[in-house]
Image (cartoon, rainbow, N blue to C red; front, top):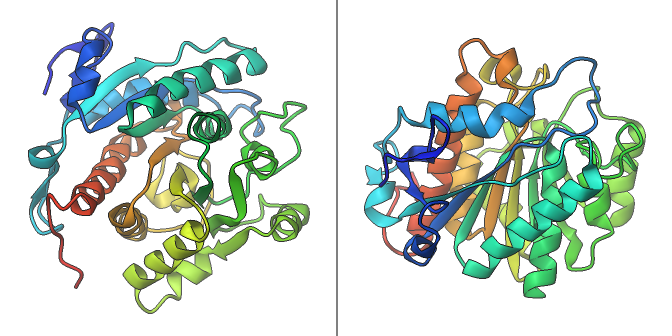
Length: 322
C-alpha cells in the first residue's frame, strides 16, 4: 500500500498503489479506483459540488484500514490489492466531450480485467462507463441500480447525458438487458409518474424502499435481486447513488427522506458482491453540503464491504451468513 499522493496533497484512496506514477503496477492489483470529478446539468437549485467528491472521499479514506470485524474479521487487504488510477480529465460545461473521455478512460480499465470502482461525480457518469463495457467486452450486462430516483428522464435541463438521465440512455444501449436492470430502493416524491411508467415499459424491475424494508430476510432478498440482474446476462454491474440512503445517514447527499439505513445498504452491497459484480460506482456525494464529511467517509465503508464480498467470491475469505 502506498503513502504517495495521487495529485496535489490528495492521497491515493485507502492508501492504494499509485497507478498514475506506476502504471505498470496495474497488472499487480486486484481492484482499481478511479475518480470522475464531473457535475453536469444541476437540477436542484444551487445544490451543487459533487465534482469535489473524488478528492474529499480520498482524503476521508485515510482514516480506514481494510479490517471489518462484523464480516467474520475479514481484512480486505490481506486478500486484495487496490490501485488508484487517478481521475478522468473532464471538460467543464462540455458533456459530450466529457462523456467520450469517461468512456475512453473506463475502456482502459475494463481492458485490465481488474475490478473497477468509480468515484463520482454525478450519476451521469454511469452511462459512458457501462457503454464502454458493452463495447469493449461484447458482454450482455445486468445492472443493480440503487437510488432514491429512477434517473431515467429523457434529458436533464436539456442535457441527454445529465445526472437525471443515465438510465434512459442505458435502456437504449445495445448490450444492456433491460429485463435484468433493477431499480432498487426507489422512493420519494422527486420521482415523477412517467419515470415509473417508462421503467415498466422497457421491462426493468422496480423495487422500492418498502420492498427492502419489508423483506423478512435481507440477505436472501439481496440474492433475489442479484438473480434478476444476472438472468440471461454475462456480468452484473452495481451503481449506487448516495441518496438511496435516508438523509439522516447521508448529510452530504440530496435531501431525501425515507431512505435506506446504512446497515441495509452495506448488507445488500456485500451480498451482491459475494455473488459477483464486474464493477461498481458510488456517486453524488456533495462535500460542501456536509460539514462533517460523513458522506465522504461512508464511501470507504461501502467500497470496503464490496471488496470484502469480492474476496469471498474469489474464495480468499469467508463471511458468516447468519
